[in-house]
Image 1 (cartoon, rainbow over the protein chains, first blue to last red):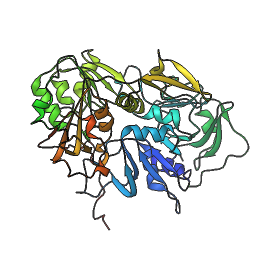
Image 2 (cartoon, chains in turn purple, cyan):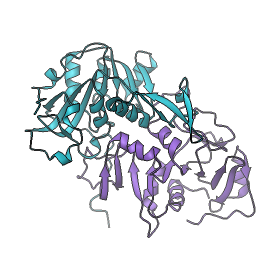
Image 3 (cartoon, one colour):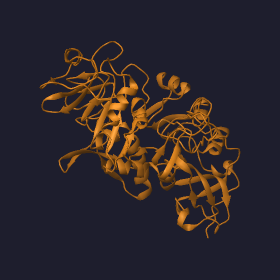
Length: 219
Length: 236
C-alpha cells in the first residue's frame, strides 16, 4: 500500500544521523521531526533565524516573536541559538547544515528540482528554496510519486520553472525510495510495503534503474 | 554619546518622499516596524519601492500600504499571503521582483558592509540567473549579485538606547540588522527605549552607528500568522 504523508516522513527520518543540523521545508518535510530515531541527536534549522527549533508551543505559550520559516509559532530547545537572515543563509551556503528536506512539484532524473512556480498561476515566490538547493550537500525530496492528475512527478526533464539544477540526491515518495545518479537516472532502492516494482516502473516517467531484488521499506 | 532619539514615527520619517526605495524589516509579520508602517500610511507618500522579504497580509504589515496604493514595486522572496497584493500584481498595478531569500539578505548585508557585489550559487540554472554574469569558482557556477541601494531602512527592534544601539528578540531579528546597516537613513522603532548605559555593550546586535533615528513604538499588535500549538492537557 502506498505510504501516507507520515509514512514518507517516517522513512526520511531513517536517513538522519547523529550530530546533523537539518533544515526541513514546509509540508511533509516538517513531519520528519516527529520521527527522529532513538539515540540520535539532530538540531533543526529554520532559515528565518533559529537553530535548535523545538515543537509547537503549548496552548497559551505562543510567542509572536518566535516562528519558523512557515510562519508557525514554535519553541526553542535547550542549546538553541538565534541569528539574522544573512547569518542563516551563510550557514546554509557554507554547508554547515548537513541535510535539507523539501517538497517538490517535479524532479528530473539528473537531480533538477522544480517547486516554486506554475506558469499561469499566482506566483508566490521561491523563499529560501533556491539558496537551499544550490548549496546543500545532501538534499532529499519528499513528495507524492504522481500529481493530482495522475502524472508522474519523476521526469526526464522538468517541465516547470526550475528551483535548482543537478542538486537532488534522493527522493522518497509514497511508493519508493530512489537515489539519483545523474549519469544513470533514478536508482530504485526500496518500495513501499505491498507496492510492486511494476507499479513504480509504470509511474516513473524518467530513466529508472531497477537492479536485483528491491526490498520493502522497513518502517 | 551621539543622541539618535526622535519624538515619534512621524518625525522619524522626515525626508521620506515619493518615489524613494525603502527597506522594511520583518519575516512575515514577525519583527515588522508596525508604527513606521502606520506613519507612512498617514504620510501618504507614494510610488515607493519596498525591499522586504514579504508583503504583509490584507489589512496588516505592508498590506496597509498596498491598500492605499502607496507601493509601486515590491522586491521580496515570498508574497503569498495577501489577496490585495495578488489583485494588484495580476492587474499590472504593482511591479514585483522575486529574489531568493538568502540573496535578498546578502544584498542587504553587502549594502551595509560596503561591498558592491558578490557571487552566490542560488538561482544558477533558473530564471533568476537571466542576464546575470556567471563565474566558476572551484568548478562550481555562481551568479553575480549587487548590493541594494535604499534611501530609507525601516526596522524594528526589541530594545534600543538613546545612542541607537539595538537588541532583537527571538526570530524577530531576521532581516532587521542587515537592513539597519544598509539604509542611507535608518529609522529604528523599539518596544523599549532606554537611556544610554542601560544596555550591556556585549549584548548589542546592531551598533548605533548604523541607526540615524530611534523612537519608542506604541501599541504593538504583533499578529501571529500561523498559530500552531500543542494541547496542554492531552486527552488520556
